[in-house]
Image 1 (cartoon, rainbow, N blue to C red):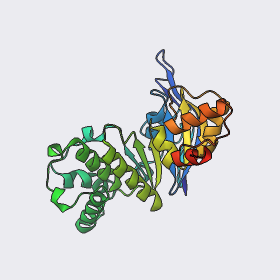
Image 2 (image 1 turned 180 degrees about the horizontal axis):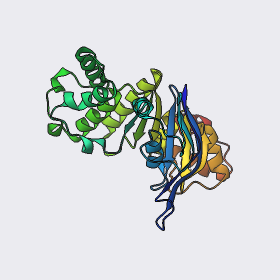
Image 3 (image 1 turned 90 degrees about the vertical axis):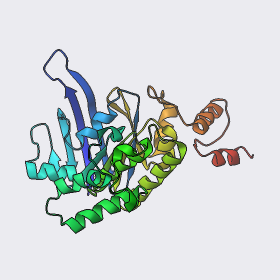
Image 4 (image 1 turned 135 degrees about the horizontal axis):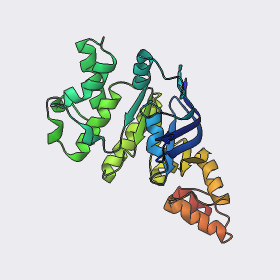
Length: 283
């Protein structure tokens, strides 16, 4: 089972003078338990790609297949399959705390599973809510609290829990670390790691190349809506050294240093791990 994207294109306002091609020729696969980093400059199409996976924006060419559900520009899933598709692909948008609306944390987190799975018993629904909140570090004391009385970081965790409560097979995270302090970023990275170990495929949209290289199993790099690189981090790094670095990307400091040392004739590995570099330098 996997999420497969083939020759995907997205054009906004097609057939008009305002037509803009946002994505062109994107092909990749996200399997169970994989952590795929999607990187690129602002405006490269990252967020549009994430939304397209759950049919939240129309696609102009190519196909998206989520397990047994496939759709193209001409064949959109019927309502029952669309509901299944959107329960399989959970999306946490950038700054999701701005989308909170319920009077209590419990109601906020229960909204998704209640609507996707109307046959859930009250007991099963309550179990899902507690399970999702537990994943983000909340206990029952938060259930009756208003999400609008929480701190910004706490609201972010409530929003993530509301998506996790549907138990998606694939999770799209759009810049989830934006605006978080170092401790919350660490906690979030640990949560993503736990989810992948439990079999969830994670598509992590990020500007943070340090996180992308250190944690993702594969990287998809977008530039002006096109696929500039795709593969394991080591393969992508080699491509960066052979060709120009895609627009708007900044290498992690250690990796950037390795590139400069190699350009000066130093035989050091291409690594983003400072300990590996120090060992190579004999330090």
